[in-house]
Image 1: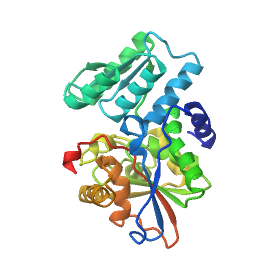
Image 2: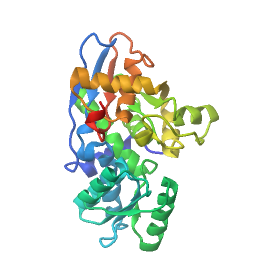
Image 3: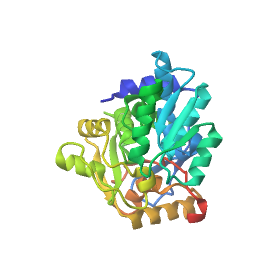
Length: 310
Protein backbone atom coordinates (compact mmCIF):
# COMPACT_ATOMS: atom_id res chain seq x y z
CA UNK A 1 0.00 0.00 0.00
CA UNK A 2 1.25 3.49 -0.79
CA UNK A 3 -0.03 6.96 0.13
CA UNK A 4 0.46 10.53 -0.99
CA UNK A 5 3.29 10.80 1.55
CA UNK A 6 5.20 8.09 -0.32
CA UNK A 7 4.67 9.95 -3.59
CA UNK A 8 5.82 13.25 -2.09
CA UNK A 9 8.97 11.57 -0.78
CA UNK A 10 9.59 10.09 -4.22
CA UNK A 11 9.16 13.50 -5.86
CA UNK A 12 11.79 15.00 -3.56
CA UNK A 13 14.14 12.08 -4.13
CA UNK A 14 14.06 12.07 -7.94
CA UNK A 15 13.94 15.85 -8.43
CA UNK A 16 16.48 16.83 -11.07
CA UNK A 17 16.73 13.26 -12.34
CA UNK A 18 13.58 13.19 -14.45
CA UNK A 19 11.99 15.51 -16.98
CA UNK A 20 8.97 17.61 -16.10
CA UNK A 21 6.85 16.62 -19.08
CA UNK A 22 4.50 19.12 -20.76
CA UNK A 23 0.73 19.22 -20.73
CA UNK A 24 -1.14 19.89 -23.98
CA UNK A 25 -4.73 21.08 -24.18
CA UNK A 26 -6.90 18.90 -26.41
CA UNK A 27 -8.85 20.71 -29.11
CA UNK A 28 -11.92 22.41 -27.70
CA UNK A 29 -15.17 20.76 -28.64
CA UNK A 30 -13.58 17.37 -29.28
CA UNK A 31 -14.88 16.05 -25.95
CA UNK A 32 -17.31 17.25 -23.31
CA UNK A 33 -15.47 19.08 -20.58
CA UNK A 34 -11.90 20.34 -20.74
CA UNK A 35 -9.30 17.71 -21.65
CA UNK A 36 -5.53 17.85 -21.25
CA UNK A 37 -2.89 15.43 -22.52
CA UNK A 38 0.03 14.76 -20.16
CA UNK A 39 2.95 14.08 -22.52
CA UNK A 40 4.84 11.59 -20.37
CA UNK A 41 6.02 9.78 -23.51
CA UNK A 42 8.70 12.50 -23.60
CA UNK A 43 10.24 11.14 -20.39
CA UNK A 44 13.74 9.59 -20.34
CA UNK A 45 13.70 6.24 -22.22
CA UNK A 46 10.30 7.14 -23.66
CA UNK A 47 8.27 5.90 -20.69
CA UNK A 48 6.95 6.99 -17.29
CA UNK A 49 8.82 4.06 -15.75
CA UNK A 50 11.98 6.14 -15.43
CA UNK A 51 10.34 7.86 -12.44
CA UNK A 52 9.83 4.68 -10.46
CA UNK A 53 13.19 3.31 -11.51
CA UNK A 54 15.06 6.32 -10.14
CA UNK A 55 13.03 6.24 -6.93
CA UNK A 56 13.76 2.54 -6.39
CA UNK A 57 17.49 2.80 -7.12
CA UNK A 58 18.01 5.94 -5.05
CA UNK A 59 15.92 4.69 -2.11
CA UNK A 60 17.91 1.46 -2.01
CA UNK A 61 21.13 3.47 -2.03
CA UNK A 62 19.88 5.57 0.91
CA UNK A 63 19.19 2.37 2.88
CA UNK A 64 22.61 0.92 2.05
CA UNK A 65 21.14 -1.92 -0.01
CA UNK A 66 22.69 -0.94 -3.35
CA UNK A 67 26.09 -2.53 -4.02
CA UNK A 68 28.32 -0.58 -6.39
CA UNK A 69 29.83 -3.73 -7.90
CA UNK A 70 26.58 -5.58 -8.80
CA UNK A 71 23.96 -2.81 -8.88
CA UNK A 72 20.47 -3.86 -9.94
CA UNK A 73 18.76 -6.66 -11.78
CA UNK A 74 15.45 -6.62 -13.64
CA UNK A 75 13.53 -9.09 -15.77
CA UNK A 76 12.07 -7.19 -18.73
CA UNK A 77 12.91 -6.65 -22.35
CA UNK A 78 10.48 -3.76 -22.50
CA UNK A 79 9.91 -0.40 -20.84
CA UNK A 80 10.80 -1.51 -17.31
CA UNK A 81 14.11 -2.92 -18.47
CA UNK A 82 14.99 0.24 -20.36
CA UNK A 83 13.99 2.57 -17.52
CA UNK A 84 15.76 0.69 -14.74
CA UNK A 85 18.91 0.21 -16.81
CA UNK A 86 18.94 3.93 -17.54
CA UNK A 87 18.47 4.87 -13.89
CA UNK A 88 21.22 2.52 -12.75
CA UNK A 89 23.63 3.86 -15.36
CA UNK A 90 22.88 7.45 -14.36
CA UNK A 91 23.46 6.62 -10.70
CA UNK A 92 26.69 4.84 -11.61
CA UNK A 93 25.96 1.19 -10.83
CA UNK A 94 25.70 -1.83 -13.13
CA UNK A 95 22.37 -3.08 -14.47
CA UNK A 96 21.75 -6.69 -15.46
CA UNK A 97 18.61 -7.28 -17.49
CA UNK A 98 17.22 -10.77 -18.05
CA UNK A 99 15.07 -11.16 -21.16
CA UNK A 100 13.60 -14.22 -22.85
CA UNK A 101 15.42 -15.56 -25.88
CA UNK A 102 12.44 -14.47 -27.95
CA UNK A 103 12.88 -10.77 -27.05
CA UNK A 104 12.91 -8.51 -30.12
CA UNK A 105 16.43 -7.74 -31.27
CA UNK A 106 15.69 -4.00 -31.43
CA UNK A 107 14.82 -3.92 -27.70
CA UNK A 108 17.87 -5.98 -26.79
CA UNK A 109 20.04 -3.52 -28.73
CA UNK A 110 18.48 -0.57 -26.88
CA UNK A 111 19.34 -2.21 -23.56
CA UNK A 112 22.95 -2.76 -24.62
CA UNK A 113 23.13 0.83 -25.90
CA UNK A 114 22.01 2.17 -22.53
CA UNK A 115 24.81 0.21 -20.90
CA UNK A 116 22.98 -2.80 -19.47
CA UNK A 117 24.38 -6.30 -19.31
CA UNK A 118 21.71 -8.28 -21.15
CA UNK A 119 21.20 -11.98 -20.40
CA UNK A 120 18.81 -13.93 -22.62
CA UNK A 121 17.30 -16.85 -20.74
CA UNK A 122 14.39 -19.15 -21.57
CA UNK A 123 11.60 -18.99 -24.11
CA UNK A 124 9.12 -17.09 -21.90
CA UNK A 125 9.18 -14.12 -19.53
CA UNK A 126 8.62 -16.39 -16.51
CA UNK A 127 11.93 -18.13 -17.15
CA UNK A 128 13.75 -14.81 -17.43
CA UNK A 129 12.08 -13.69 -14.19
CA UNK A 130 13.15 -16.84 -12.34
CA UNK A 131 16.71 -16.36 -13.59
CA UNK A 132 16.72 -12.74 -12.46
CA UNK A 133 15.51 -13.67 -8.98
CA UNK A 134 18.19 -16.34 -8.72
CA UNK A 135 20.80 -13.78 -9.78
CA UNK A 136 19.59 -11.33 -7.13
CA UNK A 137 19.77 -14.02 -4.42
CA UNK A 138 23.25 -15.09 -5.52
CA UNK A 139 24.86 -11.66 -5.99
CA UNK A 140 22.91 -9.32 -3.74
CA UNK A 141 21.85 -7.18 -6.66
CA UNK A 142 18.77 -5.04 -6.00
CA UNK A 143 15.74 -6.44 -7.81
CA UNK A 144 13.59 -3.83 -9.52
CA UNK A 145 10.06 -5.01 -10.25
CA UNK A 146 8.21 -3.73 -13.30
CA UNK A 147 5.30 -2.37 -11.23
CA UNK A 148 4.57 -4.06 -7.88
CA UNK A 149 7.06 -2.44 -5.50
CA UNK A 150 6.29 0.56 -3.28
CA UNK A 151 9.16 2.70 -4.59
CA UNK A 152 8.30 1.87 -8.20
CA UNK A 153 4.62 2.78 -7.81
CA UNK A 154 5.29 5.88 -5.72
CA UNK A 155 7.79 7.12 -8.28
CA UNK A 156 5.23 6.69 -11.03
CA UNK A 157 2.79 8.65 -8.91
CA UNK A 158 4.92 11.77 -9.20
CA UNK A 159 3.15 12.30 -12.53
CA UNK A 160 0.03 12.97 -10.49
CA UNK A 161 1.61 15.60 -8.24
CA UNK A 162 3.25 17.17 -11.27
CA UNK A 163 -0.13 17.37 -13.01
CA UNK A 164 -1.70 19.14 -10.05
CA UNK A 165 1.15 21.65 -10.01
CA UNK A 166 0.78 22.31 -13.74
CA UNK A 167 -3.01 22.53 -13.96
CA UNK A 168 -4.01 23.62 -10.49
CA UNK A 169 -6.97 21.32 -10.05
CA UNK A 170 -8.33 18.52 -12.21
CA UNK A 171 -11.46 16.49 -11.65
CA UNK A 172 -10.36 13.26 -13.31
CA UNK A 173 -7.12 11.57 -14.35
CA UNK A 174 -7.37 8.86 -17.01
CA UNK A 175 -4.58 6.28 -17.06
CA UNK A 176 -3.87 2.96 -18.76
CA UNK A 177 -3.69 -0.14 -16.54
CA UNK A 178 -1.48 -3.19 -16.97
CA UNK A 179 0.18 -4.30 -13.74
CA UNK A 180 -1.25 -1.26 -11.98
CA UNK A 181 1.86 0.56 -10.78
CA UNK A 182 1.12 3.78 -12.66
CA UNK A 183 -2.53 3.72 -11.70
CA UNK A 184 -1.70 3.11 -8.03
CA UNK A 185 0.85 5.89 -7.88
CA UNK A 186 -1.38 8.43 -9.56
CA UNK A 187 -4.42 7.47 -7.47
CA UNK A 188 -2.38 7.87 -4.29
CA UNK A 189 -1.01 11.22 -5.47
CA UNK A 190 -4.40 12.77 -6.28
CA UNK A 191 -6.41 11.05 -3.53
CA UNK A 192 -8.97 13.47 -2.14
CA UNK A 193 -8.43 15.91 -5.00
CA UNK A 194 -9.39 14.02 -8.16
CA UNK A 195 -10.82 10.68 -9.22
CA UNK A 196 -8.93 8.18 -11.36
CA UNK A 197 -10.26 6.20 -14.31
CA UNK A 198 -8.23 3.10 -15.15
CA UNK A 199 -8.45 1.98 -18.77
CA UNK A 200 -7.76 -1.61 -19.83
CA UNK A 201 -7.78 -3.58 -23.00
CA UNK A 202 -10.70 -6.00 -23.20
CA UNK A 203 -8.08 -8.65 -23.99
CA UNK A 204 -6.21 -8.26 -20.68
CA UNK A 205 -8.59 -6.95 -17.98
CA UNK A 206 -6.44 -7.38 -14.88
CA UNK A 207 -8.16 -4.71 -12.81
CA UNK A 208 -11.68 -5.67 -13.89
CA UNK A 209 -11.06 -9.31 -13.02
CA UNK A 210 -9.55 -8.43 -9.64
CA UNK A 211 -12.40 -6.12 -8.67
CA UNK A 212 -14.93 -8.77 -9.64
CA UNK A 213 -13.12 -11.47 -7.66
CA UNK A 214 -12.23 -9.27 -4.70
CA UNK A 215 -8.54 -10.11 -5.09
CA UNK A 216 -5.90 -10.16 -7.86
CA UNK A 217 -6.41 -13.11 -10.20
CA UNK A 218 -4.70 -14.37 -13.34
CA UNK A 219 -6.10 -13.38 -16.72
CA UNK A 220 -5.18 -14.42 -20.23
CA UNK A 221 -2.78 -12.00 -21.92
CA UNK A 222 -3.39 -10.98 -25.52
CA UNK A 223 -4.24 -8.00 -27.66
CA UNK A 224 -2.45 -5.20 -29.44
CA UNK A 225 -1.26 -3.49 -26.24
CA UNK A 226 0.05 -6.64 -24.57
CA UNK A 227 3.69 -5.63 -25.07
CA UNK A 228 3.31 -2.91 -22.43
CA UNK A 229 0.02 -3.74 -20.66
CA UNK A 230 0.50 -7.49 -20.67
CA UNK A 231 0.63 -8.27 -16.96
CA UNK A 232 -1.04 -11.57 -16.14
CA UNK A 233 -2.29 -10.22 -12.82
CA UNK A 234 -2.81 -6.79 -11.28
CA UNK A 235 -0.20 -6.06 -8.65
CA UNK A 236 -1.18 -6.16 -5.00
CA UNK A 237 -0.27 -2.51 -4.59
CA UNK A 238 -2.38 -1.54 -7.58
CA UNK A 239 -5.37 -3.52 -6.37
CA UNK A 240 -5.23 -2.21 -2.81
CA UNK A 241 -4.93 1.44 -3.87
CA UNK A 242 -7.69 1.03 -6.48
CA UNK A 243 -10.07 -0.30 -3.83
CA UNK A 244 -9.08 2.32 -1.25
CA UNK A 245 -9.44 5.29 -3.60
CA UNK A 246 -12.38 4.04 -5.68
CA UNK A 247 -10.67 3.85 -9.06
CA UNK A 248 -13.22 3.36 -11.83
CA UNK A 249 -12.27 0.72 -14.41
CA UNK A 250 -13.35 0.86 -18.07
CA UNK A 251 -12.59 -1.36 -21.05
CA UNK A 252 -11.67 -0.59 -24.65
CA UNK A 253 -11.19 -2.86 -27.66
CA UNK A 254 -8.11 -3.32 -29.81
CA UNK A 255 -9.96 -1.43 -32.56
CA UNK A 256 -10.56 1.47 -30.14
CA UNK A 257 -6.87 1.56 -29.24
CA UNK A 258 -5.73 1.60 -32.87
CA UNK A 259 -8.21 4.35 -33.70
CA UNK A 260 -7.09 6.47 -30.74
CA UNK A 261 -3.43 6.04 -31.62
CA UNK A 262 -4.12 7.09 -35.20
CA UNK A 263 -6.08 10.13 -34.04
CA UNK A 264 -3.23 11.27 -31.79
CA UNK A 265 -0.95 11.22 -34.82
CA UNK A 266 -3.41 12.71 -37.31
CA UNK A 267 -4.64 15.50 -35.07
CA UNK A 268 -1.71 16.26 -32.74
CA UNK A 269 1.30 14.67 -34.45
CA UNK A 270 1.89 12.62 -31.31
CA UNK A 271 3.33 9.13 -31.67
CA UNK A 272 2.71 6.80 -28.74
CA UNK A 273 2.73 3.07 -28.17
CA UNK A 274 -0.55 1.18 -28.04
CA UNK A 275 -0.46 1.00 -24.25
CA UNK A 276 -0.39 4.79 -24.00
CA UNK A 277 -3.14 5.14 -26.61
CA UNK A 278 -5.31 2.89 -24.44
CA UNK A 279 -5.94 5.74 -22.00
CA UNK A 280 -6.92 8.16 -24.77
CA UNK A 281 -9.12 5.48 -26.33
CA UNK A 282 -11.47 5.66 -23.33
CA UNK A 283 -12.48 9.18 -24.31
CA UNK A 284 -12.34 8.70 -28.07
CA UNK A 285 -14.48 5.53 -27.96
CA UNK A 286 -16.87 6.84 -25.31
CA UNK A 287 -15.93 4.29 -22.64
CA UNK A 288 -15.56 7.32 -20.39
CA UNK A 289 -17.60 10.44 -21.19
CA UNK A 290 -16.66 13.57 -19.21
CA UNK A 291 -19.43 15.76 -17.85
CA UNK A 292 -19.85 19.30 -19.13
CA UNK A 293 -17.20 21.43 -17.49
CA UNK A 294 -15.23 18.45 -16.14
CA UNK A 295 -11.45 18.94 -16.19
CA UNK A 296 -9.81 15.73 -17.37
CA UNK A 297 -6.13 14.85 -17.75
CA UNK A 298 -5.15 11.87 -19.89
CA UNK A 299 -1.70 10.42 -19.26
CA UNK A 300 0.08 9.39 -22.47
CA UNK A 301 2.59 7.18 -20.72
CA UNK A 302 5.01 5.87 -23.36
CA UNK A 303 6.30 6.05 -26.91
CA UNK A 304 8.50 2.99 -27.43
CA UNK A 305 6.97 2.05 -30.74
CA UNK A 306 7.69 1.94 -34.43
CA UNK A 307 6.47 5.16 -36.07
CA UNK A 308 6.00 3.28 -39.33
CA UNK A 309 3.07 1.42 -37.80
CA UNK A 310 1.04 4.56 -37.06
